[in-house]
Image 1 (spheres, one colour):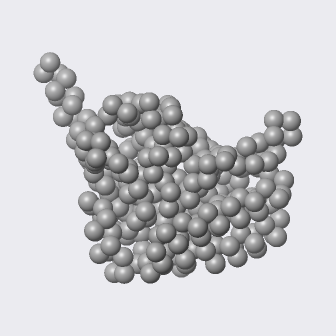
Image 2: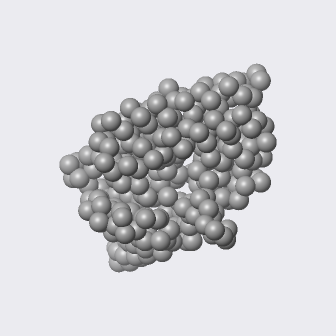
Length: 263
């Protein structure tokens, strides 16, 4: 959600790489890795976005896809330095005003959770290289385990996160540091670009918190607009910017600052 869906300059339009697709640009991985990764994508992605397939059935398919993708990666030699070098060479195109949004939250000590079905090591490195990995930012995603002796990737953390199980339960289980910071907070701003992203705040309203959801509808607007409008409170169209989230948090900070000043 932080990054653009499409590359901002390429014609014809081309997808901005996801974490897993970014690995296809890694020089340390052979063509056989890229070929098999693309085969998995071509088979499973249409199933992921097919609205006619029940979610219950998709859950098993997504576990299948992510497990195969991770097992494939671990067949080859990959180090943390390989990831760092690949990300340095591949520009990550964040949405307009993401930087201002994250900086505003950091300056006001507002906890930020980047909850992703991607790869935590890649997400953190992208933010680090753009000077956006602040102390208030927590990343919950699939994390690679590197052998301390060889430096090579040898496993993934046991808790698999895919596009259909990003929810508060996972945040409690593997994001204790984040959860400790937000347990007593009463307002949540959720941003996502997938219909299943609303699950990230599962149980929020039942616990008495106020929840505002913003959905980024990147493509196929005519086909998906109605469903997005039913799912999110507000929908941003066309691979849009972070102007609206930034306006919301800035106004809240301004109001809070005024209230503190009056005290």
